[in-house]
Image (tube, rainbow, N blue to C red; front, side, top):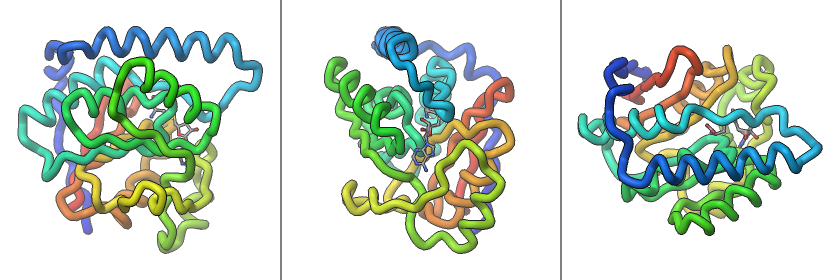
Amino acid sequence: MPLRPIKVPDSIKQLAYFDGAEELIDSANEAIEAFMLEDEDVIENFVNCDFHLFDQVLTWILDEHLLTGNRFLEFGSGFGVGSMLASMRGMESVGIEIEPRLVEHSTRVIEELGSDAKIYCGSFIPRGIEGLPDLASDVDHVDGEEGDVYDEIGMEVDDFDLIFAFPWPGEHSFFEAIFEASAAKGALLLTYRGREGMHLLRNE
Ligand SMILES: C[S@@+](CC[C@H](N)C(=O)[O-])C[C@H]1O[C@@H](n2cnc3c(N)ncnc32)[C@H](O)[C@@H]1O
């Protein structure tokens, strides 16, 4: 299925933050900072996205009625902040993270903040993606293993309506290939691209 880009306007940066989002982001940022200071083994693949911009793009996506349903999935959820912000909007929200320490810390923050987001430890890459070794050969910041975590979640990639990821520079094509091969028709892939901001694609 082809992927169709949907232009995200620059004006999203003017949107007000959702009620409670700034407080959630502040608390999460404190927890991330404490984790970075206390932990001697740096997790090289973890960098967090611009959570404020994520909150604003979520408002825009919802206001524009772009979603086909209410389920959110974060590919590589890090501290789970995107998953918590989606949950705040009433979405059924799931994050998948491969680093057990990040799963442990994000689960703690989620509990402390009373969020309904669920974080699972494993690889977001579902089994059975054709040509995976070739696709994965170009990425340095994604663990290329396939996982059974979807069995634990009780849902597959094609059960989700909005999928979010923060790929490292130059690695977004890998996420798009996984999305195109496994997401439902009509589902959206939102990626954070650093200075280029948010990028949105629909699986058609
Ligand atoms: C750039 S960080 C983004 C974290 C979070 N999404 C955010 O925006 O703040 C990417 C995350 O993906 C995780 N990751 C890498 N490969 C993965 C895989 N195959 N399955 C699940 N998580 C993975 C890394 O451990 C890291 O925490």
